[in-house]
Length: 130
Image 1: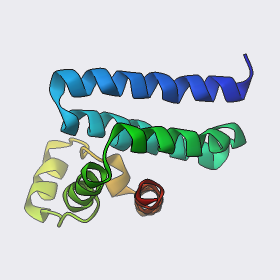
Image 2 (image 1 turned 120 degrees about the vertical axis):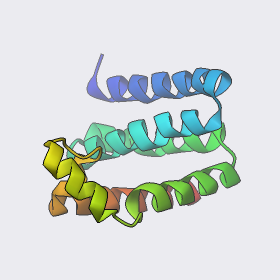
Image 3 (image 1 turned 180 degrees about the vertical axis):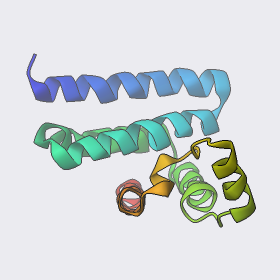
Image 4 (image 1 turned 135 degrees about the horizontal axis):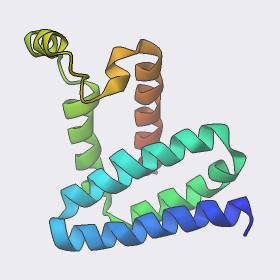
């Protein structure tokens, strides 16, 4: 099987899993899985691999088929406010540093990686709006 077929198989399986997740755990969990976890990872791969990039439009089209536009808008707004544009709680950050624990989002500690993730968020939001 060639690389393009492998990329297609990946997103098709992820979309099928999403339908099962939505049925069992609800839309929020399904959106978390498919967009925040899988689409962001796929997009990062697409930035490096033309075979993933070629499959991105079909993957996005399937996501838009699975969820109504309002669901996607609401989810992306919630994700923006809870993850990408949330105000940092410096007191909690200081406690995490004292305990020696890593933050939940490692990209927050590296400004370059953080900028890349933020750019991916804007790209995902744009892709899902169309």
